[in-house]
Image (cartoon, rainbow, N blue to C red; front, side, top):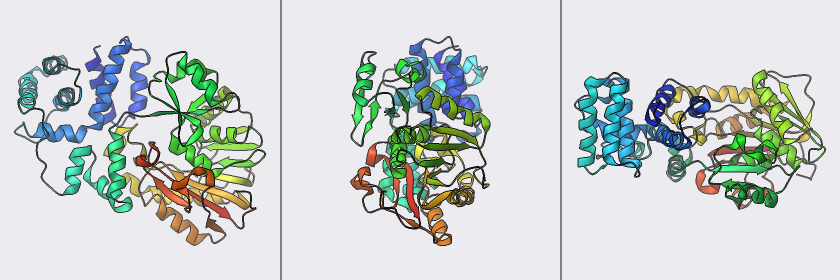
Length: 443
């Protein structure tokens, strides 16, 4: 199988509702492709997924019928060819055209080879320009950033155009790999030195001394330091969420929707592996991921529990701190999972009731004077501020509490906030910190 054939099959799978990261791992697991061809296929695959609406706008200018009326195979091959021409400068124009024609023939659509050839050559003759966009500003932003106009409008109305552009611009940039140093086993300096011996560049994050930013760490699971439990991968926004919880050694903490366990692991390290963390997840298979991760990292204070977050569990204790990181629409992580942006908004509209139910139950585990943190990896105000407003109106024994000082100037004076890429370079996120009753004065 060629690199382009592999990319085609991945695009087809994602259009059939597969998650991009899972599809990619599955495709390459037993692949005979060289590392170079895998890298090419991955870039082409993710690029076409990210730029889908832009590519369809370009192609539509050079065909006589609606693009959705094309056979799926023809449309995807055209998108792949256009992406190579416009966004992959290292691919010669002739190769982009000829390989696209060869691919459509391989897919037994030889009758469309003339159309594929003609459209791609027309794009070249027009200097690979994006044709003018008719419509309002949301339509124009949609073509510019390849995101549905209705989603752009929702984010703009919730958080303003500047924040929306920040998220959309970042969504088209390469993902940043951020590591969380396992301070139970090592420190930042030692880990950076070890990574450098394998040619891996790691720099300290300006926002946390135990976070490292890597630009060339490719195969994490086969990296010796990962296997040794010296780090786990965690976006900087997610690490900020753990700082909002601010767990201390010896405390009891509940992570109510924990899998795959990144926040649980970071909080255990912040606690110096002293105390108890109950990491809860609905499905046993995902609970197993937490157990395996804790074992690899050498963290003994974690107990993974299979639990329904919407039902009170009498076997769970009252906790000093509860993290309620709820299932969400995921609009904040479209940089790493581009397919999320194309999902119908109706799928997000039903989530706020589920989120509020989980938050209500999570609050039942908080001790008097304890901390409750609610978070999502989305930038949909209905799943964020609106959920908190409803919860606080119903639960007068909880109140918003300002974020800890060590979280930095951006968080100062706030108890809830959305985070956009322009702040820390990470994913879009939402964090709210609340306290039950009066503070003990220790944070």
